[in-house]
Image 1 (spheres, chains in turn cyan, purple):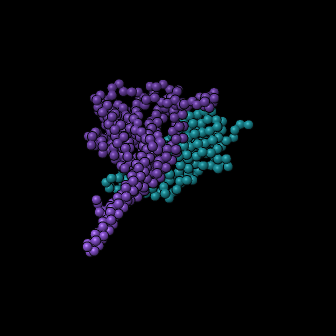
Image 2: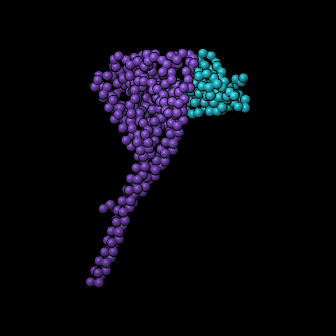
Image 3: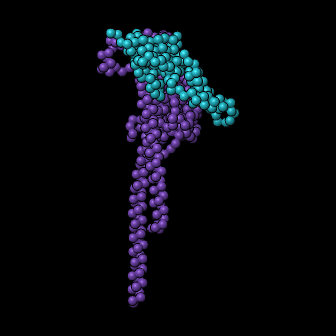
Length: 137
Length: 298
């Protein structure tokens, strides 16, 4: 009998975000979104910043926000290498909003010694997180 | 001989120093655990990345990316120097400085302009003293908590510098963490990328090789390689940062351990002197009394 599950690993330089068996994975490839089912042919693609959806063995859908990276699909596993990745259920909306406000305040203040680039990057991250949580589908 | 009081205050001074060095030792130990944890967390990513990169590189030609092509003439070299922000870590920083000096002098002998990026206060101060060109500096990175974004934003700058011709080569000097007792400074060439390491085929993998996938690539293998190469540089920088941080904490732990031991030795010898001095003063007093009694009797 053909394999019914596929192992999904989402790895960032800082941690393992996901490492479990799943039924299907959807990922935002640079050439368009694609889905991977068990026994997929070996496949390599670069990924856009966006969401990875997957369905676990209990058929619950999960969403992971990733920024840039690659995925390698083999018949029995999918590996996603992303620079950052975060599960939707683990994003703390209050924290994200607080971070958003903080970053904006920093960007607008004219004080010396503020790293604008960092504030800007923080703002982008916070915005992406808030969007991710607030758009349900 | 110093007075009793002086010795006593010296002993208590050394004891206080010992408390500090011991505390620093423990702080370094806990930071070291954190740094090693970060290294462990990074390993799966790095290994997987190297595997995929090696697979793709197999399928492409070498001239595919400008990042792989050495420049015909090397006139400007950029050296990235990783040191710590704080001292009190034994020979850690001076080892890194010696190594940097070595390669900088080597380049200068060949008539090549050298500019530096300093990660860490110690390296920056050293470079200032040596009157080297400091293109950029990053403080509060090495030894602290930092994310991959530090490596990627700096990596981006380095790549731009290389592509625009500001630098013809980019090298990085960092400390490799071999073991608790051994951290050695190493130099690596970041740009142009020397060679992509092919995945090492171990016995077990070789058996699998019939299965080794001919991947479908999307977009093409060439395009994929082009997006992966810059990342491989960020990975190298991040790796170097992790190694250096771990080394720093290990070096500090050891230095502080030695300092604590030295304090113990000092306390011991001072206590000995103190006891001797006390004994001597008692003897003197006794002799005074005996002498006085003799005089009275006489």
